[in-house]
Image (cartoon, rainbow, N blue to C red):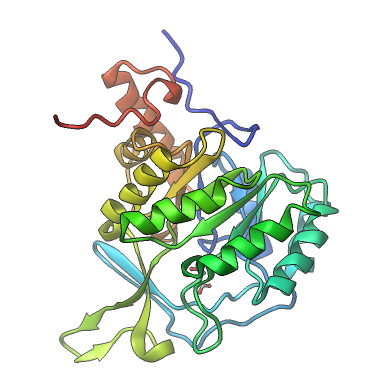
Length: 313
Ligand code: SIN
């Protein structure tokens, strides 16, 4: 029987499977990271780190319902040195994407310089889209001037494959303009999308919000955001240089969801809400379901349909 190949490449980094965790989902502590190393995910993405350890926002700060999740975590992380030390002492068996989320250009450059010294880190995913830093920080991905300035400077010293994690955009012109900025630089990949900012989930019975920070407003993830994420992947796929890979993220809970993302132009996908819900076995399940779906459709490699979404004329 012909083997079904779900391996992929992100900026020349080979992944044995196109399915990995999203930054933020069970990838903060030593135990969570070790579980990911031992799992069948194609890569490991760390929780977005800052220079110093952060406890994050007040709890409750995460809530999920049948078709979505809302969070305002506030970047709880153990600080970059923890992630570097963890990676130095572990036997690394898959590509490692270190997620970085500095509070300023200066902090981002500092963290990127530090990560450049660590051979076990395969790539850097710079999180320009955290929506949850109450009163302190804008969503950098919506500030096109910030992104231009960041990219203009970072490639003067960065030598690692580097990508940026973007917020969702809702106007085509914003995607076109962002793509034209990105196309000017030797960027390896983009990850789209982060959670949809400023969502509000209401508990009708208690007549209350469900998370504490920011009066209950937070980033929305899960199944409910998949159509928005797919549209960002598809539009970026048509506007970006072809050597820039896209990692799709938002609402993946089945092998067929993974297929849809690849059809729209993603070379790999990240799983967040459903990973938190289901745990580490999700990677085996999604791989199995994706392979079964491809077999039914007579595809033997993701290359055979990547970006081939048909239009209705
Ligand atoms: C958070 O820690 O608040 C979530 C991170 C993110 O959405 O980028």
